[in-house]
Image 1 (cartoon, rainbow, N blue to C red):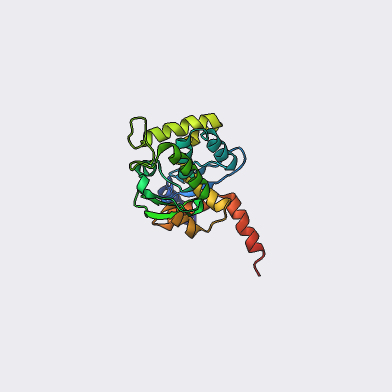
Image 2 (cartoon, one colour; image 1 turned 90 degrees about the vertical axis):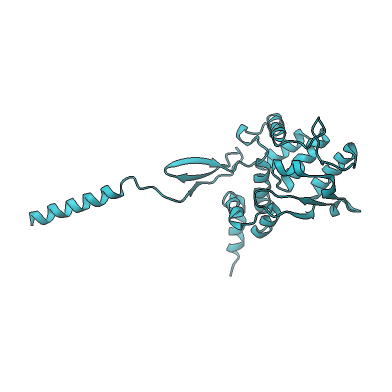
Length: 238
């Protein structure tokens, strides 16, 4: 009997030794917040390390940022288009005047966006707030062919310059330092569509030019407000 117990304990210790230190192979979402302090950081856990991802601005922050650049028609148009249409900095630099098709009425203005990172390029109607900002810029720039947004040396505005502008206006608007980068506008676009505009995930995918809906689903996990609205709908389900 004593020999049996000793062997059982020996086998058990071998089993736990083999499993010691084993780590998960897939990321796990362990924290999603979206409060008025701006602590809206999506974390994943891989090999016991926490790494922040997808910094986005909440409603009062994006309003402050847009207000900070309003007096500069070029920069205001850039930030409006970047935010409302979810453009990357490099995609802003690629815009040409020929990509803009003004309509008889502002709400019919159209914009062709050339998506990078294997995204889906398309022409779509402009969000009126972005269309208004672009028309204001064109009045100053003129409608001559060429890059839509020029730098001081009359070349397409660079990704580096756009990031500098995001840091400059972000500081002016009091945006948290870790959100003062141009790509946060794209993240803010996605989360705003889901949480504030209540747009369904399929249409958000199209708006961002995602080829794979799994890329869009990441944003759905970020928005507490969207989850509350979904629960309100489910509560009425009979």
